Amino acid sequence: MKIIDGHCHLASTRYIPQQFFEDVAANITCKMIAYGEKVSYSKILQMLLMQHNDHYGDRLIVEMDAASISRTVLLIPDFSSAMAMPLPQREIYEAHFQVTQKYPGRFYVFPGVNPLRGQVALDEFVESIENFGFHGLKLYPPCGYSPSNKCLYPFYDFCQEKSLPVLLHTGPTVQSLNLTLMPPSLICAAARDFPGVNFILAHGAVAYVEEAVELARNWPNLYIDTGGISGAIFPGKWQKQLLSVLLADIENKVIFGSDWPVTRMSGGLKNLVTGITSNPAITQQITPTALQVFFGENITRLIEGG
Image 1 (cartoon, rainbow, N blue to C red):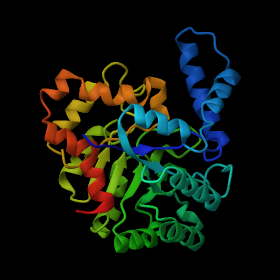
Image 2: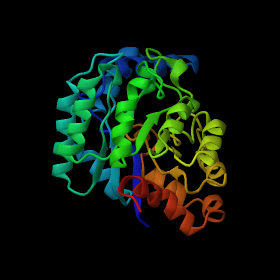
Image 3: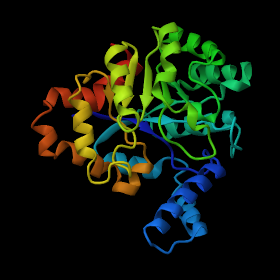
């Protein structure tokens, strides 16, 4: 079975803001203290930073191979409208391109943009597609914009012209960002105005699930992914959650995604894949053909056509 991870990031402090790590550490500390554990915020933060030193994707490749994942979509977030980025976005694009050169044929790349930067951001995005051969667009609306904001329409025009998919974050995020911009339905105006663009609702199988599933069922150009499903939201019950989504009559609209490196906290990529392929409740109700569509064919169709 060909497996493609449709939602992944390089685990690197070079591409994710310090503020993001600080917010995550604060939330983890609060939760652990509530359960009576003696923890230090500074130690939690240090642990998170140390876990994000895979700057060139070497550790990710090892996990991919162990899980029999043939290819992965690397998402490049751009938090610059809300947080200080460690590097200029153009340099981050270049670094990801170097990873694709180091491991040819193993990665697709969706560069992120800050659409509030206007033409400068659009030019950088277009250059990344034309010069680096990147494959789609990554958006993080809670950084301060609706995914249907007209400032994004020039990006969508280009994506529609080039048949590039657009993946946008939906659902919970850290407290420093705008939590009113999380719902999947915010994409509806843009999805109507750009019927030739396929939009992927990241984490749609995890948060706002009922809304995301209904959108995927009723809009031809809306899809959802499973990024983060094995994380803390469904501890010990994530296979049941996944099965409910796979049985929702949208098998052609659900994309396998891990949200690595978050997945490392729940056993890594191999545990995620085997947790699906070796789970009787899933394999007895989902046909091998449907699993293949979920594991690889849906995302391949969006990126490569066909």
